[in-house]
Length: 74
Image (tube, rainbow, N blue to C red; front, side, top):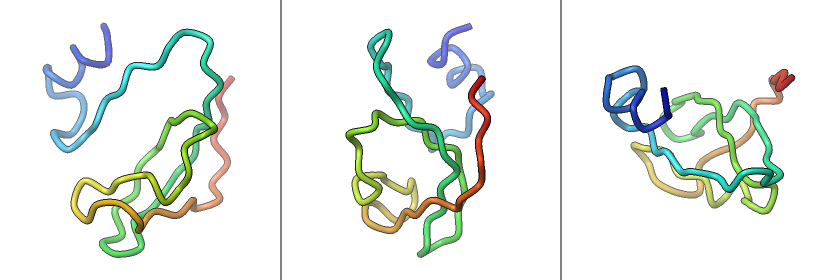
């Protein structure tokens, strides 16, 4: 099942933004939190994406920080 199919089937919250990565793109996985509304989520993004570019579904850009939680990606 693709990410888009999971979104349509309701397995992802409706405010989830899905972006398809090119195969082999170097990426980072980390838990982030919006310091404005306290929403937490797992962000998977290219290394070139800055935290200030991440967007909370409720508050917009500029409020996200990493929690420091270690995410195992193996």
